[in-house]
Image 1 (cartoon, rainbow, N blue to C red):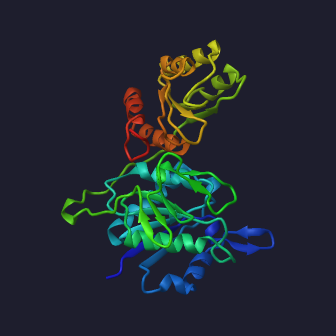
Image 2: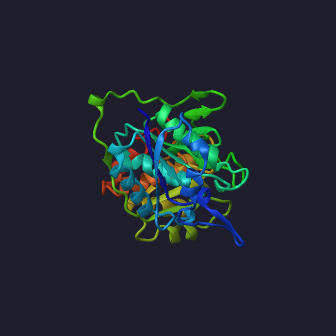
Image 3: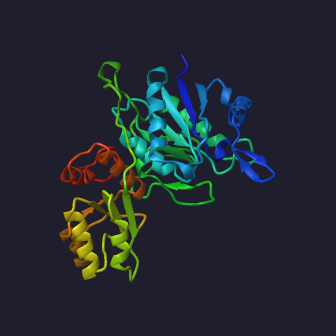
Length: 338
């Protein structure tokens, strides 16, 4: 019996149509393009259902409420399908993939987020191969977690970043090898194929995410403490500091006092490196240790996208600040290396 895959088309370039003013979203265009393409109906391919969202969402407009809608859509169809493919715009695809990874607990089926740089209906589109492979992999190489598929690689969703603006290799996973590579042969690398017996499957748990006031500050030479003071004004609950190297920051007295006051007032402050690859280690240099003494916690090797969405997830649970600080440094869904 063929596997059944649910396709949720949320919006994005993959389903757009050419017009005099450039590519535009058009209801039904993606579904028509897929149904008219014989490759999607080959014997090797799984059965699939396409659900186009209305209205379609430009990924630049994606918000936590949209993450919630996508997650609830998957949960509503969870028992009727063997896997799920979410079609999404590339700009915030890594954020949505990260958010979904935290929202779902006890996943026993694959959820693959993908899209394209050129619309599926256009010449040279990467959308066709991305969607074809995502469907095939979801059916035949089921890795029971949220993944992001692009340019022949399936990445862990919460390890992914958009690294290139205009290339087919738009995404990368700096601190974790791909779950799977689809070349001439499909090779499972970091992923684990789902082998859970039906009797051992735990009920799917969906945690709600509500919008949370989170600040992000990118450190730069000469940054003023006033910049930070403006970012952490109420009702901000958490702050992500994009620091230098392995987690270093200027030893500016005013800046450090501002950070310590914010931490003492219950704001959760997470230190993430501006570097794409590597791990935060605030014990390595005095400039990093100073942050630690102010109550800042290290983000280990999490991406900005994972750090932000994990904070949304934990803050939505209304947990005590100290518990959130502990969980931010705890590996929950494979988002950090421990």
